[in-house]
Amino acid sequence: GINAEYGDSDQFDKKMDEILSRVAEHVHPPSSDNNRTSMASSVGETLPDCPPPDYRTAIRSRAPRPGDKVISLHFKHAYYTATIISFDKQNMTYLIEWDDGDPSGRNPKYNQVGLNVEPDDDDIGEGSKVFFPQGAYGGTEGNNTGGIRYHEGIVESSVVRNGIKYFSGHHTRGEEDGKWVTYRNYNYTFDNMTTAELRIAPNAMDALFQMESEGED
Image (cartoon, rainbow, N blue to C red; front, side, top):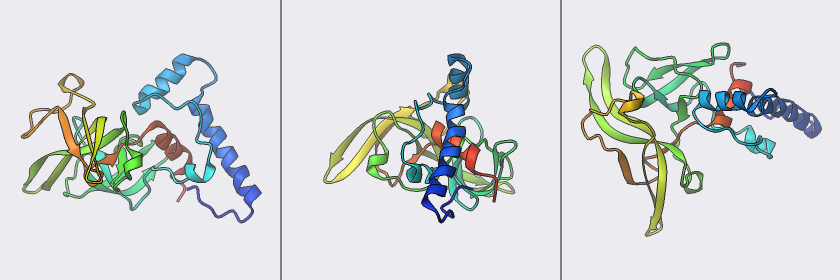
């Protein structure tokens, strides 16, 4: 993976220039805008106009690594807690272990997994994609132990009350997208959630850095 093992600052910056140049090829494909649109579609959002300018910030990407606790896609646009076991760079997939022990759906794609780490207030704003909890589920004998179900949402607004910031928004996908919406306590919106409850969904740059930096350990 990318790290700061380079003792010489010039050597470190040269290496980061090389990596970011490779990432920029994904961000700005050389052929046409259609390719850019296609790549954006594959990672689920519009790609940024340029790589982050701060290299040392860039290498602290939110792309998960083996051993990290994460929120990961299972089926029908529902997400659950898990731990990263390994990353397959050739196929761009993770091997994960679900916290509830479920044996299925253990190879999510690189852009379907986000760190299970509480974000800072400044990490979330209007338009941010997040994972939010909605609906608990019971265990199934011989399959899983049950837990909390997460979903991808988009933040529409925030408000500060008594020094605490609360965020509200809605699901990014619905039944027309194949999302499961018949679970108990389903609601299209989420309201007044704090960073203790929300997690940052992966974005295009996280995914691209994952493509460039992981799978080498």
